[in-house]
Length: 142
Image 1: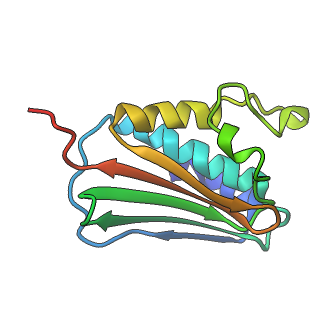
Image 2: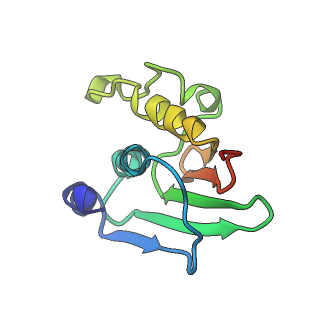
């Protein structure tokens, strides 16, 4: 989160990090997983209409799936339903005018899949967005 401090502080006065207690260790490439968090928080910051809108980063253990779940939720502009199926497509962006390349969520999605996980989106225009990243603890490796 240190890398994101300046961006977050410039975007919102209401950033919360809620870390689940007693999370089991997660195997993976931590630099790549950090990139996922950076991309998700960056998108959340860019979606906020004003500094009073909030962002929440949370982690928890899902016993049913034997997975760690990371969620980034924002009170931003939301994603139109027609765009939701395409948000992880390479070069798809609704922010081209402001410099968006459409690669952030595509890269994040690829990293999550490399770790045997999945990324899901819950969003509606004007209601904000919640991105959930589910990373299994047992990836069937040795």
